[in-house]
Length: 126
Image 1 (tube, rainbow, N blue to C red):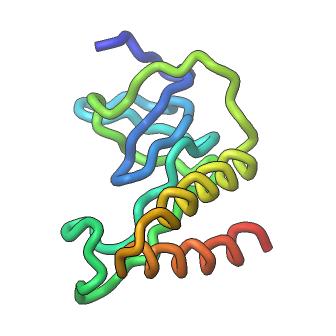
Image 2 (image 1 turned 90 degrees about the horizontal axis):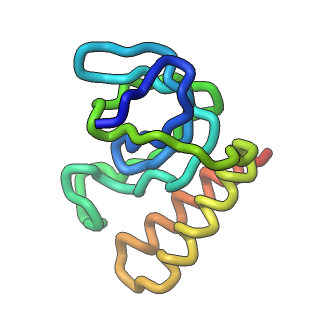
């Protein structure tokens, strides 16, 4: 495992999203990571029944906010050495990529996910 220190820039996988952030604290099992950009927007729907539309509650999953901090298990954090994009630009790019992938899927889950993304976009970019 890489020697990660406070202040290091890292990628962090949290639930189904992937983020670029800065380590702000080191805990026994986790790093506390402050979000600076998004690489992959979280999947929509029920995390316990992925890609299923017929679930009790189809969750609208938001990306972590700019500078929001979250505990990430140490094994889900890796060093990041590239230039960090602007948060809003990275959010737009991650949503566009997700939409493109979903548009190639005719399932009920993909259709509901696209509706969720449209709702999130209205909120994110107002």
